[in-house]
Image: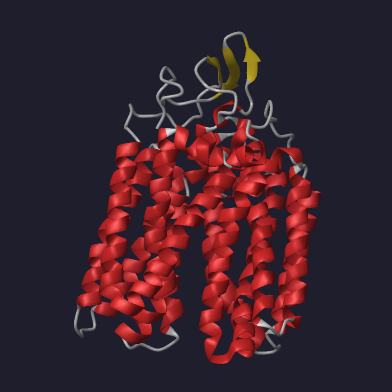
Length: 456
């Protein structure tokens, strides 16, 4: 899997991603301590609101970025986002009002909503071979999981010798280093679209969502995002409740539980490149979603159980399987998007995925927290379990099976569309011809391409 790091451009971009992730992790720890200094006992409320603001920024800003991404050089966009994030992190230690925290968090996460989809859209151009791109996706999944384990540990070590305000300095350095690495990378020239969708700014901002709704397997991806959000919300929001209140264990057991989730995710991310060489994306992703829905039954047993030493290892096992199944769904997502949209629409599509997936978390995070607090954990498990099961079955229905697929990317095919209007998002890179529109891309059978070769 590490063979993809031989590519200099990808190596620099991956290093930029890792360094920025560590900086963000340090900022998360420092932000919690800052909120406690400002709000005292209300720190939890402040952080909850900040998390909601983060999700709103992701949902609202990413489509706007997709609308203008074809007009701004990708390197300039990513570097600008890193510099904005560094500037915000530099200001955070000096705030003394809650509203200032909210404003800066919105700016910070808006910059992240600009950086991440652009970064995701660049990688398929840097690594055009399917095998290399699959390994890059696994590397990215590992980076996220390792950051969730490494950053809190690093923060704990640093806080033993410095005050938390200095953690923001580490964040600033991380974002500046990320910007420098992006500047040093030679990015391939993007495939340009023929023109923006009709409908002005609003049409461009909604082009990605309309593109998702036009392709059956991308509609299935929307349902898969909801399955992952239901499971990860239980882990993120209620791990501390399970460990401290339900099982009565010490504070030190909380990172152990979260580590079990990360370990499951990393184990799958390490093995998936070889699996995806032989098994279609559809099989892996749908089985992961159905597994997530099934594991909610195990979590219900842990929640309803009384006493017994079995509940702690059972919770760790449930969290590990949650992590593994989430990785089965999330890791191949980039391959699915790359195969489903024209090259000129990738940034728009990745921005839509970023926005729509975080919209699912915006629903499940408060549901996991508020329902668990007011009606009990068993009610939260039941509600999110039903959501996960319904969404996974919907994904199976929306993504029809086909003959076994080969692991290679299908060759681009030149073809024409005669029944689509000028503003249709699928036509962003098409040229006008007599009687319709013509463009070239790899495609699978759907209602837009009923005669395309079958791909999973």
